[in-house]
Length: 279
Figure (tube, rainbow, N blue to C red):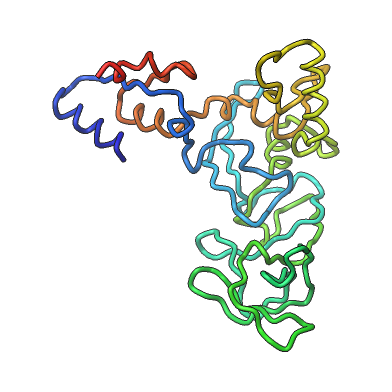
């Protein structure tokens, strides 16, 4: 908001001119747009408890042909692999997970089992509150529990075969597996993990230490194994290396450029280069 006002003031005081806006390379200044193309915004399989907000994109294949791509399923789409253990929670008209009254699902007991994340089956939705919390009736109880959040609720899992996307998947996130299949970057039998895990990162850290890299500084920098013999370490990494994802700019850069001006970020840890420090 402050930046938008600053740009407006500049445009009023310098009509017809382009400005160069300079920023410290801080975490706050690096905030990404809510619909930014970020690989971490996707899980491996379809659906999930939150529908992705990633903006539609365009990618170019090896023949130079451009393809439009959405990150949510639409009517007429094809599921390109057998998706197992998918929980297609119902959505409202705005694409928000919303369970109808009477729905039978699986749910945790909020506040009742602090040391357990176990889901109870056969739970029935009694009512829904305005803030998208619910009152549920658990089969082994004589009382209703109110204030249950969506994160504690899910429909039973199902397996979906290759072919036309069924109605219950429409509007849900595709997941990184489907996205990469649509781009022809993997096949349906790919065994790549969703992303590098703790064990992989430990190996990377040990490998870096063995090369005496990182002495006197953090050795936790690498989070992915990268490429090995032309193969990526995980789906997360492969997707993050695609041109449209690599070209994603932060919210400040997008705002400044959308107004027709230029944006410069200083090198990290060097705020003294910012001329505002002289005033």
